[in-house]
Amino acid sequence: MTLKINHVSGAKEAESVRSLVQEEVEGQRAELIDLSLKIHRNPELGFQEVRASRWLTGYLRKKGFRIEMGVSGLATAFRATYGSGKPQIALMAEYDALPEIGHGCGHNLIAASAVGAATAAKLAVERYGGTITVLGTPAEEIYGGKAIMAEQGIFADLDMAMMVHPGNRNAVIIKALACVSLEVEFWGRAAHAAAQPEEGINALDAVLQSFNAVNALRQHIKSSARVHGIVTDGGEAANIVPAHSAASFLVRAEDEAYLDVLKERVLNCFRAASLATGARLEHRWGKTYYAPMRSNRTLARLFGRNMELLGHKIDWSQRETGFGSTDMGNVSQLVPSIHPFIAVAPPGVVTHSAEFASYAASQSGWAGLVLAAKALSLTVCDLLASPRLRQRVWREFRTGSAEGRQSLGQTRQ
Ligand SMILES: [Zn+2]
Ligand SMILES: [Zn+2]
Image (cartoon, rainbow, N blue to C red; front, side):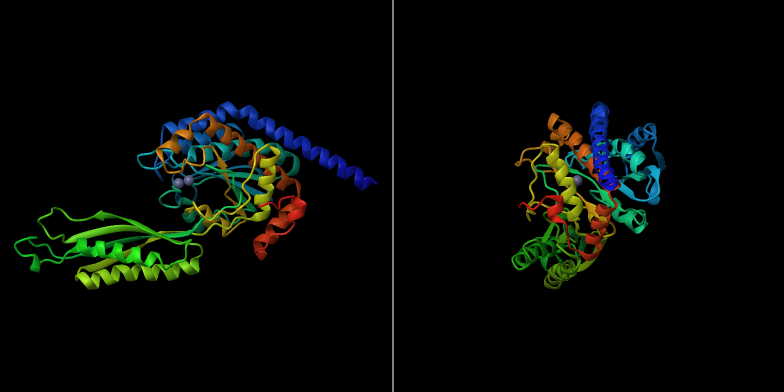
């Protein structure tokens, strides 16, 4: 009987913490929007996010978080913590922009939602104990800041890691491909292109042959894999046989094993072009490896249920189109993680476009920001309140299979 009464009052209390957390996000609405707009108006490329990291840590410090700047040896990375001990739940803030189109990936909204969720979740930390952390993870777009931070071990002590990315649909279980970059150069010999072409070795032809070979290869690789690139040097003048050419490629696959297979087959395209043209090939695989995303389904369903309770529909399917790669994949290999998308733009508007950048500073962007902050902080409440739920998340992470579908109430497709 006593147990029952405790259970009922516990549930009542959990509900009151959940509603206080939502009110707290609501109370910060104007400040969070302002923070997102400041970052949007001052786009900074990867590892140059000096102002964004200063604004974000300034806000968190004001709300009582302990701040460490320059963690993992990265000047614009930070860790902001509130509370102490286990469990340690981290929310990821991204804040880098893209060249030319600024916040065309909406990372200004990611940053503001993580900060809003964490500062609201303080209430849950005070009630249940544990630690809430915001990790400021720079240079997602080009250098894979989280991949570097993962190597430095900053995620080792975490129990869960979450973030929300703005997009054009609401989806909680997402896929992201393993990805590695490839830089190639061909070295030929210059000659007058009309007077003594027989003396020349055409490095541009080597690049063109490589593209043709990759295009032919593409039909015979797994449909989820991606190989794409650009020419970065194609010669100097039409009357000179190009002595040098260069190209930049990305190779992506659903898992690391297939990525290894694909890397060799892609490299063979360049080797073949070198042999055919006589231009010497030099290649360098990128230092940064983006691991595939391993969405924790238990966590994802919990987050999705909170989205639904907040009155939003979820796309529960795992659509296999329209995904790229993210350095959150590297985090997800180490600790149970989610990287859901929240719609801030209509389905036809894609990320990495100027149009999406304008949605990242619009009414719908702000609605997405507040929704993300609420759903994240409610999910933190649930996790801090329930050791059994945390165990379930970890059991899935260790065994690779989700359980408890029914009890979380999410089975639809
Ligand atoms: Zn992006
Ligand atoms: Zn992004």
